Length: 221
Image 1 (cartoon, rainbow, N blue to C red):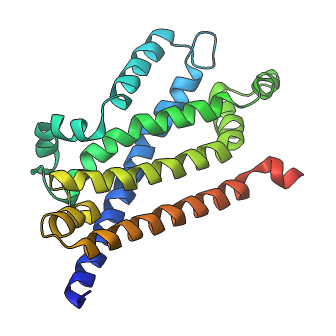
Image 2: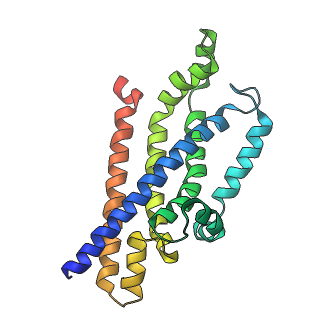
Image 3: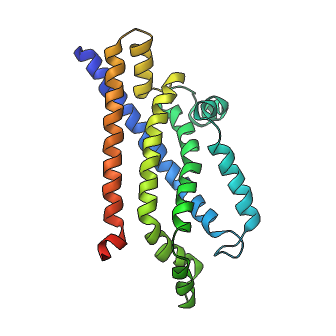
């Protein structure tokens, strides 16, 4: 492979990492509080608001059930309004973030709901406020599950960032389509696949290691 193609692969990899990093960060900033609210706002829960919980749950489910490629096309006007264009890496961040937010919300919600309810009752009995229970009990106890869930989110974002290349989103997917498919260069397609596999494996390994590190139960054992 020529130095020019290697440079293209390198730049495409950086573009993909940029899209995943920014959308993952934004998705976490939006999705984590939403997941915490969904986990604590049911009937008789810490921040009881069952109607709001139900409405937000429906919105989350509707967004999650929309195929990503359809979501990308459907929100093109919104993407243009946010970044001024519907193509390129910056434009791809918008649908990636919208797809990641409900995914992360459900992951955080599930991790928090797995926390032993007895810990919540004990904390409230000792005079803790609902906010203190969330910050000092629920989040620390759910952190290993949240970490693994965020790892899965990043892996999904890597796959989606490659998919968005089909509509001019840039990154590895765009490189594979333009050179590997349209210009009949199978070696480019092969190296794109290899790079994606390496990235996914690296993210998975780091996420699992971090989850073990923050797992209090393992440290206590």
